[in-house]
Length: 209
Image (tube, rainbow, N blue to C red; front, side, top):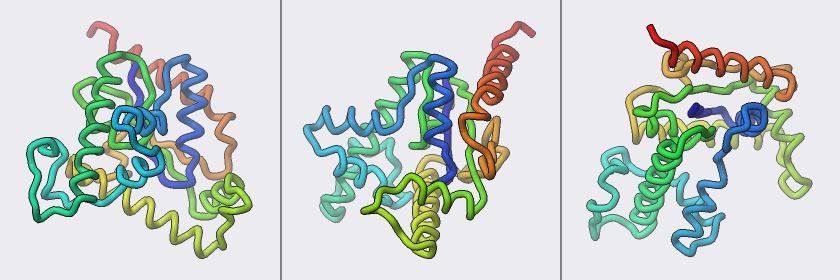
């Protein structure tokens, strides 16, 4: 049972993934992947997180990250390619280990050969603003206009990152098995229904035809 969750920023996809992990009793991976990379390379986790999200030109696919190095490329871009290649390797290894939930990081594309259940979590603008404000510390409080810009920028970066892996558009419903709109609902209230749908999907997929 391998589940991937792509999500809009502020939609609650991370919370849904964690609660679904508890409900299904399978491992959950999100920031844990960043921690693995940082530990493997002796780097700061915040630095790895920033580099992992750095925009890399689509002409430099991650699959060639270990052999395509050019003096014309900046150190930051080279580092981004190395870290993203490492991230891809870790996600593939998680898939080989078995049952898990992986949030973000184009896991649905990376784990395609493992036939995962792919979800996309989204919400209306006001719902995302409200959720971001509620989960921000006092030091992180932003104005509504600042939050809107941040949400748009992060979602644009996520779509751009996905473009490095596939032509299948980020957020397009045909690329997922289930799309969940969290507008106006508490995440914890929908987890049992989502978990049941996932169980049924895997049961149908694995049943003899």
